[in-house]
Image (cartoon, rainbow, N blue to C red):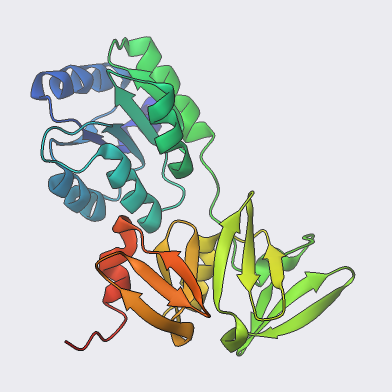
Length: 256
């Protein structure tokens, strides 16, 4: 990447250890980055992300005692921006951490024994391999075998060589499984390769995210248990994820 391109990129660096952030800042300056935004705690990092809209995030996994983790921060970032590259930097990279982090699609993991070359290599690959924006549902139907498109209050799912109309109101919820998304109806499940995040944007506010795996139709909810974090829909119990709970509850009227 050219020096001008590097200078224009905004990087959000989040780590609770100030000596380490200082070191990384020096390395980033040597590489050619000048727009560096440093935060040492979860709340400050999230606020900075919303204000700065960075081109790349460097996140520590463990943000210190009493703080939410860098994984939770990455989940919030993914809800806001599904394409921005995320690089995790940790002093304790384990298989367990990898299993906890992979759903947010990080570009890579790095240990804290950094060099300028290692950091530059990781960042340039992350930016070069950045996932392009997801097209709208209607535009995505071209050359696709399982993408629905919306027409008024209907969804059309491709089944074989034709599209089957499903009323949006008849869909209880969407769920993600094995790299596909399924629309749950009373009769059957309809698969699509559209991500939950895209469906969430297209079908809001009727459909709200309650979990990384579930997008629910508010009109089908029978019961909400805020103590056990459970939503009951059509006699099924679905979990409410911590990351989505606050936003979800804003869209339902809980009378006490």
